[in-house]
Length: 146
Image (cartoon, rainbow, N blue to C red; front, side, top):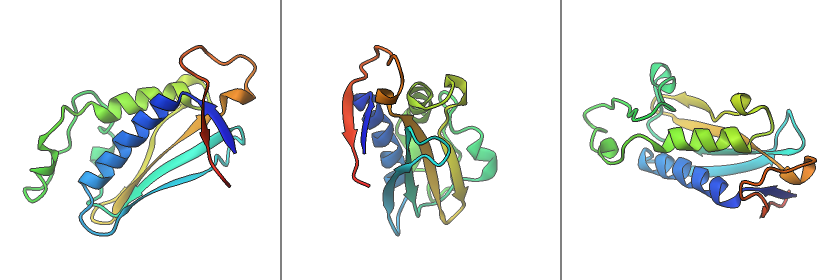
């Protein structure tokens, strides 16, 4: 599959999600999974999954807000000391522009269980499948084999 999208922005989102996953994973690992979006065959579904500390349900609602950093246990507090809490908010904004639906419907979704890990996933539209791609740096190709 050959997906035409904004290559640099997609890499920015992936770098942020992978960095967060690695920062909060002490045992197990982190993986990136690529698949066709089950709701739109013109889109690629990308997920970053980890076996890290997980996120409480009440905290999941705050993840994509500006300057929001999660309150961690004393054991984990030093992990989240760096950064401003803007990475996920910026990534969310990018995904809104790259996704297959109306901008307000494109989201980074989260599934997480405390002490078991998290999965962040989103979809990216193949802009070669739409009639008039926007001029926002679109044109780079992401190739996946599947």
